[in-house]
Image 1 (spheres, one colour):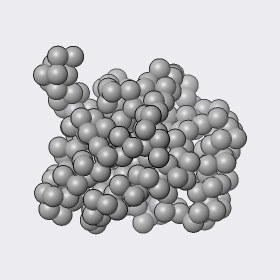
Image 2 (cartoon, rainbow, N blue to C red):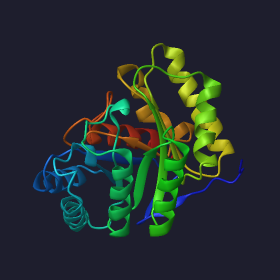
Image 3 (cartoon, one colour):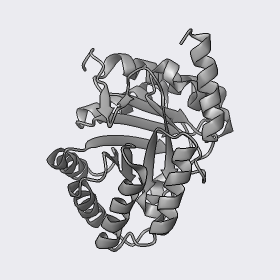
Image 4 (tube, one colour):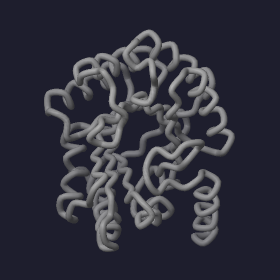
Length: 259
């Protein structure tokens, strides 16, 4: 594992640069709704946007997805954009596409030059993870490999191994989101994040979900998490705070640190 921390500069936003980024997910069902949601969310202060395409009614029509992606890029200017299809196992919306079709969609959208990052689950079949890596590399976008558990939190050692797994699979960013059952789960997630941040050569993102894990969304950067997720218009995961509330917390912490 690398001892040198990698910082990604995407359209002027630094992932892993010491200042936490705020991302909001777009979950509109139509192209018009997505563009409006993006404008509203940016007005509230999001640094990064994620298009959760599994919510999009036209996901089965590649041309409709591409047209929506181009319209979204026009609406958001130079804001970094993540393109994500979350599977039902990870609390995503059910869709009519199989995994091969999802990867073909990823390829088409990445080739269009309108997104900056693709997110894909690291626990997918190894051949498909390699395909996602190849798609990202071929089109000059970054790959986030993520692990989600909406029921529990693995032990400390497994959490660290998950971060390391993402780097071994040649991710550009490693992301973990887990559900705490007891307070120690939240502590373990933060310790694992700190260890991964110290050991890996890629930025890491982590969050403990639900009410018990809210503190990780507010203070994750102190343990090495490069980005957190906040509510723009619609909450996409348990425990997300409104952007304004999170920004206020960040401002207080920065002042306390003399920033």
